[in-house]
Picture 1 (tube, helix red, strand yellow):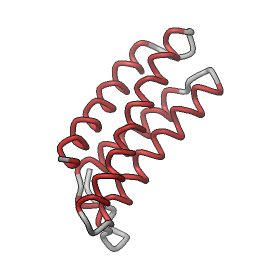
Picture 2: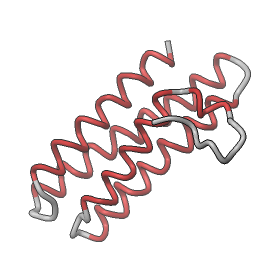
Picture 3: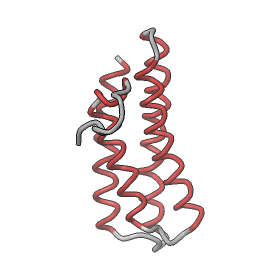
Picture 4: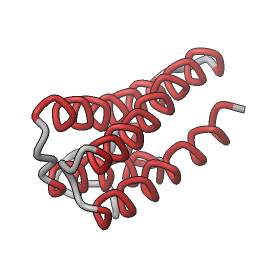
Amino acid sequence: MTAPQSRSPLPHHSLQVFHVARELLISVREAQIRDAKLRDEATRAAKGACLNIAEGAARVTRSDKARAYAIARGEASEVGAAIEIAVLVGAASAADEAKIVALASRVVAMLTRLIR
């Protein structure tokens, strides 16, 4: 994925992790988790990951960036947990779980490198 062409580039557009986090958000939406509470948790966490990545990219100091990226990492982990629980209670498919957990893991790994 590349930065949107119709808009001026913002700092987060240059980060590959932002684009992977967007894929994560889209995958959560497409999973159509049947448990409303878990669907809301997963969606909010995926949105939070995207937004905190964008916030971190716009920060100036290393510590400010790291703080925002750490929050985003926690949000991505929450997405993974929400889909795992949804599968356990029969509210989502194993295929959706595999895709979402893989994306969430990728986001967590990428953010871990940005935090250091």
